Length: 104
Image (cartoon, rainbow, N blue to C red):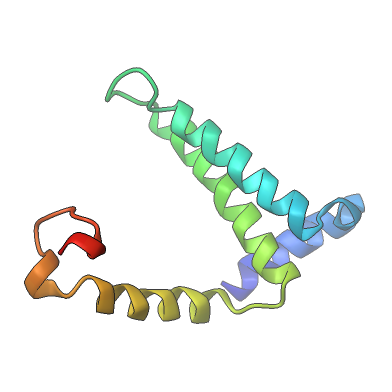
């Protein structure tokens, strides 16, 4: 993950784009790119895997940039959220169903 973060930093620095990467702009970009990812699945269940991967890469890149900008550890926040979610969705109540935790 550190190599990936460093490559993104270098890419942006070479282009002097960090000035545009405020937390707000990065959050907006995540949402915009997520919409483009969703568009890949808009009308039916068939999709172009290459196109999906390109949009997924955009979403992930902006997420990584936002985490980096905020000085948060991606692994730490994801693992922490996973632990919270485990408590909300215990296996014995949630296995095999998609019911929201408030209705389990």
